[in-house]
Image (cartoon, rainbow, N blue to C red; front, side, top):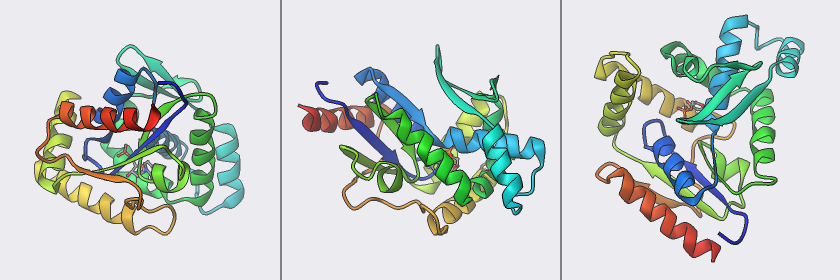
Length: 224
Ligand code: DC
């Protein structure tokens, strides 16, 4: 690709964002940033320290002393909190159940948004999340909004957890996804919304490769 490009991929949990975004980045040989992983990293550290989010001074101190970094590893991105590799821990059910608390916090969103923007200063990248095309990069060259049916999304999450060695009930996963969807779309700050200028892609009946090829085609149209 001749020019620097930002590809913003948003959508609800289980819509296929991270798998698709990672493969698009790999094919285009550009950086992939999973913004949800950063919110998860702050959530993990918050749970460990049990800080009171309501106390402004405590929260500011927490954000000042907590460092979150992403690095590319052999099998995808690695995430570190205060230099400790927490790539696996951030996917736990406990982190998933508490991440909304962190991601609706104004101070935390500001810190994360700044961090996400800085990643694009010198790099072309693919970034996935909930507010990438609306808030983080409103001028992204290409915006994709992924969806899939709730049944399909729950099934995918179950498969992911199974690969990680966690057996969970499908109904429980479905309820958790619905609760998070509601929270993410109805929250006051940076709610999950399809940007007007995003391309809507329903992945329910599409193979991963079909989604990846579609996004690559759209990217090449934009970056020639
Ligand atoms: O993509 P994920 O499920 O790993 O994201 C975890 C949570 O982080 C999700 O429930 C909402 C929040 N999130 C957010 O508010 N904004 C983003 N850009 C990415 C994730």
